[in-house]
Structures are given as structure tokens and as C-alpha cells.
Length: 512
Image (cartoon, rainbow, N blue to C red):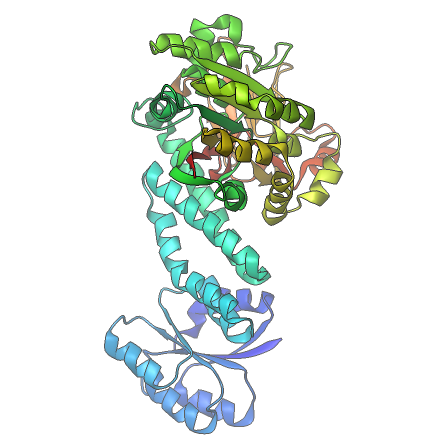
């Protein structure tokens, strides 16, 4: 245990913070004044000091002056409510190692202590310091975001910090970031529950439904072929992992995030992208292309036809080709005839590798070992892409002069919290959302939708309803409960409400 002395005249207000630090390996001794602390230090050893500036009698800075006379090498972290330059300058003049502002978050203290005790490389120290300085700003954004644009920026910020911290292998710092991400997903789920109906019915909301019309069609031009690559299940952090390989041959023209519709699954999201219609309208206007949840057969067999229907509806010539790559053999075949695709204004390719990772139910134990965390999941994606046919296709695309669009239909989340669900016999199978005549689950863990039309979703029956799992929850039936919990805990699933599932990268690339 690392010995810490915490000096504050109102130390009783920080019992929960002290318990938190105890769990992280810090033994905390408390004093209520500077003189009491000086007496303690004359007889006892400590490795760092936390001290409040605003105390009756001796102030924090006055106490530090006295402490420094006999204990000049003990690092001190000042805690203050004041943002005044004079207070900060005094602290720096006394060689205070760090200063924190009230109200205190226990993770702030942990970050500061971690920075003190980790003797890492300069780069690692800089990253930790930068994250520490950004911690409260990120928290404020999480707590006060009130628009989808705000939440997209929060997600991008968290992802970028994940990537930076994974490079320096700081477990404790990464855990703090994950706690921020968890809190963000909790509040994001609340935001979606309160605002999704308005958003999905707003034409200005960039979603699966209008993505093709607003962001793909404007990129098309005669004589300049465009290759749209939809990598099923690709998250923003995974895109950032493979981005360095892509920009060797391409310049980024556009790099945005759009929002996937609910449920965040291929049947709904990708069909909406290719049709330019909501699920309820696909079912209404193209019933021959829509397969209900309980019907037999694939749920996305008519993507080519839906693209064609959208071109016709938009009054555009359907000079395009559609390809689906489900294995390396398909990729090799496309690569060999890729030069023939130059005659198309648009070539659409669906690439399924990332989706196969998360859907490998038969090999779920093996996949859990390969991708036991988001970091491992990114590394798996990176290793695959470097040696994939898709990487070869993108490189050849540069030589052939293709503009390339890379996007996905939805993301995925690592689930670790099971919640019971029940319903009638025709309840759907997905672990992150359910639809049926009757469904029962915890309101705390799920968004319950009794009127699917509000979310532009079709009803299989007059009394159809949907539920969507929030945060990192997955639905499990009471029958064989433990077996399914053990099987699917810490696997990657999609269909529900989380930033990882709903925020999708959309990248436009010009050949160098």
C-alpha cells in the first residue's frame, strides 16, 4: 500500500473518496489542520500529501511552507476552490506537484496520484497529464450534453483517448476512462430514450435513412468511379485503427459520424441505408423485400434491389453494381476483376469480416479469448486488415483511380450485464433487442416501446412492441439462465442503445 496523508478541515465529507483510494492500493491517513499534519509527519512516513488550501488557522499554502522545511521531497497535491491566478502562482512557487479543483471526483485524485508514482517515459507522462487535464472537461460535456452533435463529439473524444492510452499500457488510467465511458453510455441511453422519436422524424437528423441521399449521391460523378465499402459492424475506434494503412494511398476528404437507427442490426440499418426508407416504409412500399422477424429466410437478401429502387425514386440513372464479400475467395474474385468496375459510376461492396467476429456463436469461447476487451478487439481488426483482401482492394483502387467511401451500418458493444426477459412464443432472438406481442424486462435496463410507429418500425401484429437494451446489457431468458450468461457475457453484440452501436464512421477518400 502507498501511504498518503490527506489534510482537510472537512475531511469527513470525503469518506467515499478515501474508500475508493483504499481499493486502488492507497493507505490514507487524515488530519484536519496544518499543525496536526506537521506533528504527524515528524513521527511518521508518507509518500504523498493531499492538502486543502482553504482551512481555518494555517491555510494550505502556509502549511506547505512549514512542511517543506523538514520534508522537502514529499510530493504535494493542493486542493482548492479558487481559480485565482494568485493561488495557483503561490502553489507553483512552493513547488506543489499538482493542484485539483473542488468539487472533487475520486478519479481526479487517482489520476493525480498515478501521475506522481508512475515513472514512465516522457510520452506516457505527457499522455497521462493531458488526459488528467481533460478529465473534468470530458465529465462536464457528459453531464451537460443536450444534442446528438454533443454526444458524437463525446464519443469521438473518448475513442481518441482510448487509442492513446492503449499505446502506453496504463491499466489504472484506462479503467478511469472506461468508467467515464460507462457513465457517458448511461446518460446517452437516457438522451436517446427522451429524444429519439423527435430525431428519427426530423429530416435534418443524419441517420441510416438519409445517409445515401445526403452523403453518397453527392460524391458520384460521371467518369470518376466511386467504390462504396460497407464493412458490416465497423466501429469508429476500429476505423481509427486501420486508418493509418488506408491513408498511405488516400487522402481523407470527409470524416464524419452518422447515427444508426434502432434496432442497430443489419435487417433494419443496412436495409434503410440502401433503400433510403425507414423500416416501416420498406415494409409498406416494398413488402416483397421485407422479411419479418419470425419469418424464415435471410433478413437482408434484397440489398441490390433496394439500391435500384432508391436510384429510381431519386430520379438517377442506376449506373451501379452491387457485390457482397463473405469470405477471402469472394474478395480475391472481386480483386481480379476490379478494373471492370471502373465503368460503373458507383460500385457498392458489403464486406462481412468484422460482423463474422461478433457473430461467431459456434466458436464463442474462442472469439472471447481473441477479443476479450475493446483493445483486443481493435488489435484483432488491425491484424486482419493488414493481411486482408480488403486492404489489397483499397490499394488497387488507388491505382485504378477510384474514389472510396468507407462506412458501416452499425457498431457493436461488449456486453457484461445480463437482465431477464420474457415474452410470448414468437419473441425475436437478438440479445440486445426484442420484438413480440408481449415482452417483459427491467425498465431500468431497457427502453420499452409499445408503439413501434413512433420509431418508424413495422409491427408484426396489432399489439407488437419492442424493447432495446441500454448500455452494456444483454437479454437472457430464465430457462437455462446461467448457461447463457456464461456463454455470452463479455461478447460483442449489437441491436441496442449505446454510443458504440449507434455512432458509425463515414469516410470519403480521394486517391493520392
